[in-house]
Length: 378
Image 1 (cartoon, rainbow, N blue to C red):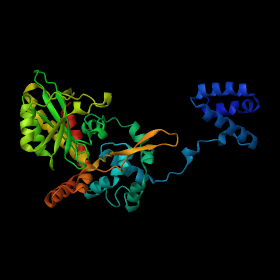
Image 2 (image 1 turned 90 degrees about the vertical axis):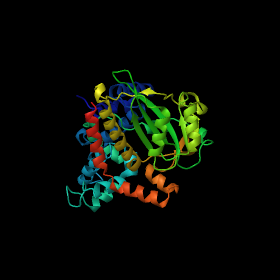
Image 3 (image 1 turned 90 degrees about the horizontal axis):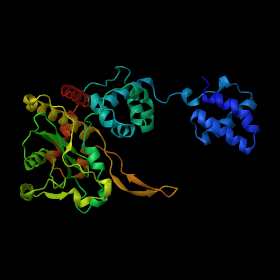
Image 4 (image 1 turned 135 degrees about the vertical axis):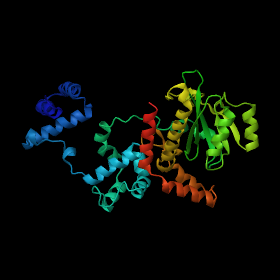
């Protein structure tokens, strides 16, 4: 089979000697055969012409990137794959931002030890200095052979990213406490639906999810969710069909502001997430209560991994590219727990409890727990 470089070498002499129209025809043939762009095909043809004149044989023409010595050691690459799998297989830009927290957790709980499987302080420095693009490049093979599904990786992040924050600035203070609420139904064979509620903090990305048994009132769900948040909830953004008199009365008594997504609707940018269906197997009807307990264990483990180890980023403005295109600008990715601690809204006792919990979390153990609970729900 003829390689693209061999085709470029074949066309190089005739391309150099052809007229402008002939060069266009050769470029068309080469781009169609190789899938290259015209600019890249033109570059390769000229490069091959120079190599022919210099007497460089085709066997000496190689992809230099493949022979380029790797910047990071094999031990660092193996440790990188362990960190990636233990943290839930995130993309490179988020793994780079959360690398320090992940390494500290893995070291604290004995998954990475000095002198074990080649891990050392120099390997740790390599991992802390690795870029997002390099992470994705080194993990390309691991991702290709990895068949773990992304089922239930968290619902809050997509919900949070869907809302135009500039329209919400009039509703909230620039501090944690204002939550988006997503309601998802889980179909059951008996016809009664379970409901999963997801709270997502607009400012810091804190996510909390819980599944409730059939027949639970929405106001009771909201009250339980608010009690589970480790800081003060100041407001909630509900789907349009949810608010009623009971919810309004509860919110006034709890000093919580209520708004509807319909107040912020801006074309298709704000999705309608009112009681959207969630494909979550809960087993036979008589086993629903036990299945809900397992599901909530899964949500808890996912929330701990997202809140304590997975960074989020916030839009901070716009910038113009050199070509005049407007692009979003974001702040540096940080984990929700680090944003919460930096906000200064916690009392000293809350801060100590949160730090103690963060230090006690084993990211590899969380990921193993998530996999175990997912397997029991199939």
